[in-house]
Length: 519
Image (tube, rainbow, N blue to C red; front, top):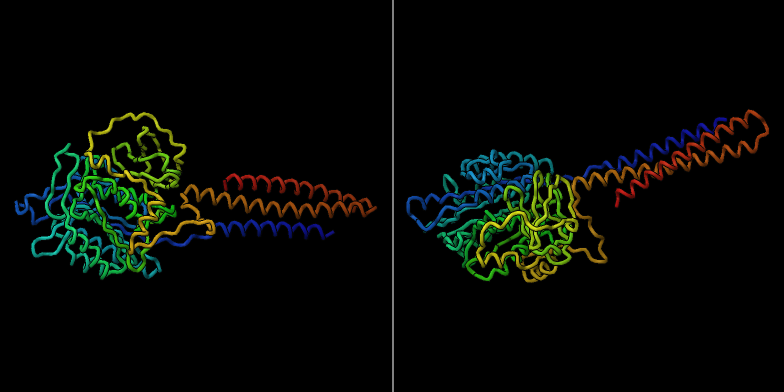
């Protein structure tokens, strides 16, 4: 008479342990991500040594503040701490309302204060076993006075090579440092055609050595990507309302350059993307070239890891079917331009919190994404655009920028020609494919699917146990000829048969839910 209750207790205990094991395994924490620190600097003002007519050819810039605000808006979704150093003009404050109140003066004093603050946090990260990463972005004037060192212009002085080396790179114990520099040298040249582009000359030898060769020789954990148009110019463009280089860098970092869709944007990927974006610009005066050197300690160290990006949505799918397209929001901020090879399964991170327009030659599509959304490009419906393009474009840029499609084929050929770059891995037939980076909504579905799977397994085990008890009760009923034992066996049979049915139906339902969620 005591056998059935003991078996029941054992079955309940087994079911509970199975469910608990599934929940514990599912709730295991993921590995800690790198701690990212961002400084985004944008300075439209002239270098101090050019004020007062010493170099009247140098003109103030128009969009360095927009460059910094756009980079900050994107990168703070990756960062533990982020600082914006720029003076936004009135129009830019309207466009970047969400970050305008966070801006500080682009001065040496503010930069030194931020470095001192970051040093404390980065040292704490290193003690805790984390890998702190510093991303320093600069857009503005670069100068090299006669007989002096090259420098980047700030409001109260110059960010010289010595200050960069001795007060930033040498004092911050970051595991990795990434420098993204959109700077200019010598005189500014205003192109008169439609006032659509402003270009500033750069020096081949000076720019290539500045922040690239000498910096990386002394600091092997530092990588750099900078506009260094050899014998040509770096540009601002009214069509982008940004610097061309800065806009292209953000287009790549948002996922346009992620050629193997693993979420990690490496130097080789970004450099190949930028080269493809500019290769068809026919006019050499308008062509943008780029210098990029990954950290010599690890040439595959990513600049950003989009798997840790917070607060954004993802456009996902075969981007090659759209041709050349760009993403713009309702405030007129152009977030990314992309021209992908056919079949390139791209994942492009886009901002949320408002209306987005995806535009190509066929028209425009209107989206209102929320954080964590994944929008398949195959579902995007294009219609005749509701707004007209803002003015004519400079012919060389209009026809040339993003005229060469980017994807795995272009990337492989590009990396094969370089001695300094290491290719990202691609999945082959014999490789185990890595899962695509998942959004918070994806992870929630995965968690729910694992939970449902655990419940289905536990329910199946419980149904099996109760089924055995049902058969055992039926056998006891058939063996006895006494009324009381027969009644007891009959009651147990009825009870266990009901429990078997309930747990079996529950297991089937949980299994169905798990299957649907996993799809």
